[in-house]
Image (cartoon, rainbow, N blue to C red):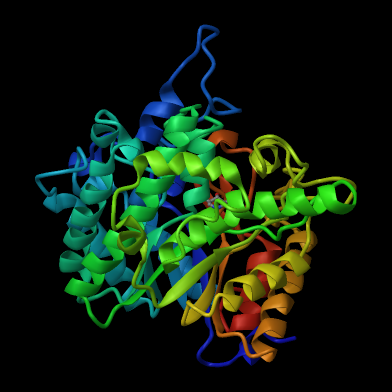
Length: 452
Ligand code: IFM
């Protein structure tokens, strides 16, 4: 299969996120985000919540090196760059006064993309909530959803003339479950009330944010992204079936169905009834978002043993996945057909005009030797997953884009700098970028100029 055979209307892109690459945590008036706070927090043994003790203070230094990164994207032959905006660069405390220097930075970044012939795809929220909003409850406070709609409008007014493609949220599942129930991600909460409240308020913010965007930019291409996993239970017979259905409800449906007007699937997972305490009359309509596309983010399948809290122990960050199949360096099971399954499941709702795979990729133990990184397993991962997208298109599913995660190795949240997901190797000591074989593979396929 040649990638360009998927057609001229198919977008090939790479993705990153602000906290994972930018560094410069207080440059040009930026305020602190919850990830700045979280990565610096120490317990009584002096350990931080990040496995290797690193932070995003420098990361890949892309706040300063973005021209070089965008030139790389163009050389690799990609059509589009999906990046996220750090809200606390725009509103240092998350509300009120706008920091013009922050807006200017992202305008420069977008202009650089456009000059390089790379389409900017902008994500408004990739987990780095301004600390000022966390201080008043963060996503457990309904007000934060209103502040998100305000911020969305600020961005639409500031960049709507140059950005056509917008995404509201990156993977609410990780904000809500990893951040508010399991506590492994910022803000590090571990409570059921925090889980239910944040779930509902992020869903509300998706509805409100989509309408703020549409009101300001009626012709924009508006989407949001979800971490999705095929509903496969482990165990036998009816128990496996029950496990699969309840995990599907908690991990997938609770995030997808509210934003398409279906409310919460509490008939499949009674635990979700906890959300009711935070709902007000009319919220089912308020959460319903005005979207042109759904961004599908697929990495692995999550195994779902039937537990009192369905799905909880299956999140890959906590050792889910695996089970004998081939895995990535993080132990995440490689299961390409799962991508086809989630694409079909999202298409079956009949509510999303288009689907875009806004993330997919794999971490392997890459080694830099003599200036090269040979990563044949990553190339195979992409070939197998992209084949699923091609099959879905052949079945008539309107999926029209694929974004590789990630342009370059970067700060992988609670796992720090050890996992390497990039098509480009980052030498953290020098910040040198070295294109891996997988990057050259994309360049050759997509008509980019980069060659070994
Ligand atoms: O690095 C993350 C990204 O921020 C969100 N999706 C999953 C990626 C790999 O874990």
